[in-house]
Image (cartoon, rainbow, N blue to C red; front, side, top):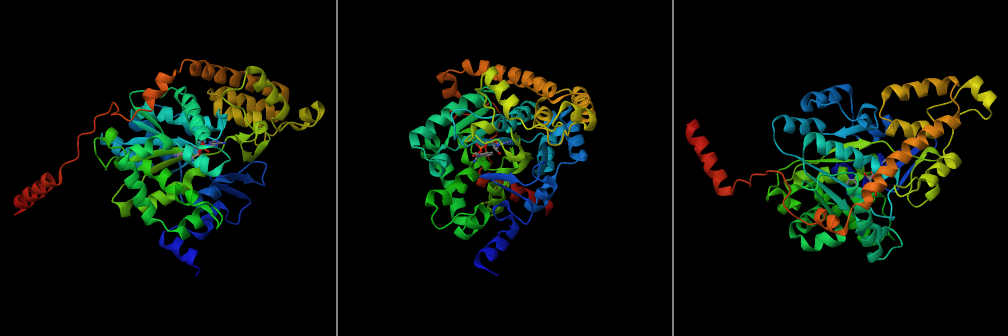
Length: 434
Ligand code: TYM
């Protein structure tokens, strides 16, 4: 066994997890999502490769039962499809014990694209439904290390992205957004957890999980410890009243899972709780499901800052069609919803199940033409992005400052029991037993 294989085995991470490649026809890792199939990544195979658990009807029913509310359509339609330890989070909620949400964004462009919105839209629903605090990490340090950006440019993008995130409507009294570059140097508790993670993960392990090579800068090699640390409530004493035992739930697309497999592995050795996860599929590029939307190639993406005209032009010009080559052929053979990008986008953003089903039926039969499908999608996205743009204009620098100030959030966390009290309680228990 090679050194790396041995290290991965010790860390309970399999060799095929390395870079998310395996021997299938797709690659999924934090930097690359590609598939040779027109229908995109095989998510059932990915679940097996990553060792997560598929979200089944029983979990959805339980979520509806404990919250007394219907689940979000992204969950109902399988867009959020995989999880780790979601049942433990629901146990906590049922026992009226607190948990918190953690998600993030790597600010690589001034504007976010529609794909980036997916985890934030869902996180907003989780915050409203479970009424819990949320921390959002903006990894401007990560983008500085990976991209050709200065520290100032990366930090500027973090603040611009914070405005897009705030425009999703998070509760200001229950949400803390932080830029790594601004926050970490003033937070000894966060830095201590980073050091703990750094000491527990070897170079061989990060090399195995993330594929780092000999010429990667040392900043990249230690970065995973920075993305891991917000998973522990002890990293935010100002929010959680010094408690280290508040469980964390992380909503994200499945490309971020490698960071959290590593985190879950080190957590017990740090006397910390493993974070739970809920993963989404990828919002496809305009050209089709072989890749995800990418901020660095504007022709693949619709940005939350695009004008109505840009949205219309991009969809008409680039959105891959599953329709026939001619109207006659389309009417004869029908359209293929599984590869049609306009239809796929509707499955993320159209709320009515009935209308979606009707479109699927009439497009598949050839009755509905590609042009009509695209027209309906353009209307949906212009409305959604138009409203987002409008909310963004109301976000002042002062509002951003409020969200980004470390502070107590509106949630009651009783302080931890001091060790002397714990001992007393134990003694009392023992006495009673005798
Ligand atoms: P980033 O900026 O690449 O992506 C931000 C969030 O969007 C998800 N995402 C997508 N979801 C659906 N379809 C897509 N096409 C798509 N592209 C990106 C990502 O999975 C992510 O949830 N290193 C991270 C920032 C980060 C983070 C976190 C993310 C720090 N801590 C905790 C999630 C959870 C990054 O660069 O994300």
